[in-house]
Amino acid sequence: MPAATNSVAQQFELFGLFEPAAPAAGRAQRRFVHGAHSFTYELRRASRKSIGIRIDEAAVRVSAPRWVSLGQIEQVLADKAGWVLQQLQLREQRLREQRCLRVDWADGAALPYLGGELRLRLAGRAQRAARLDEAQGTLLLPLEPDCATETLRAATQAWMRERALELFTRRAHEFAQRLGVRVTAVGLSSARTRWGSAGADGRLRLHWRLLHFAPHIVDYVVAHEVSHLREMNHGPRFWATVAEVFPDWRRVRQELRDSVLPPW
Image (cartoon, rainbow, N blue to C red; front, top):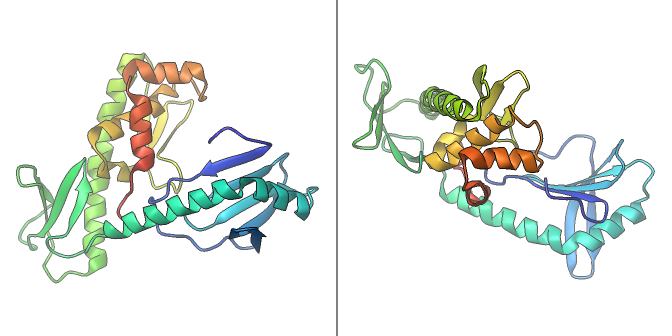
């Protein structure tokens, strides 16, 4: 999360990861207007010491201590209004890009896969299992051409999750060996706002949809999480650890932040 400024914790989520979510229940919807700046936000009172602004795929969300007045909250929003509007514009741009990547779930559909394109072909029930033709960039699925959209999507996801676990596990152990740490297990995640996580017990969880990105982006996320097995924080020693196995982490981290996933 970006550093706090003027006691405001700001977090800009990874837009493009998911379809817009419904507003959270129990949060007050308010309209902020200050000169030429206006936007709607959700206000939640919480046990915290400062006012936090978070912009995700659904809304501008403000969390504030119970003792802070509405006037104080509005003053913080006035101070940060330009930043909020800039992030909202970026969100809209990313959502437009995401719509352009929407998958047409039918025979011949294409989706991003490890930096390239994977085309889906429905080979019929005579084929016993999904098979990747790497030379043609084609995934042959044991489904009939008239199968339901949800059936095709589920079969594609099942295959991708299997491939993701295989790739992530192999790369995690390779990075762990280079860092002298131990990975005890690798699992898959479908988290809304995180690409991966690491536990002190050596367990890693990585988002299966990383498989849409180029291999160097996958490697950055895996290296990031494996590095946490040495440093369970994001301090200077942690980033020095990442650099040991992935020197170009700054550029690739930004590339990941700028990336957009196709909606499923």
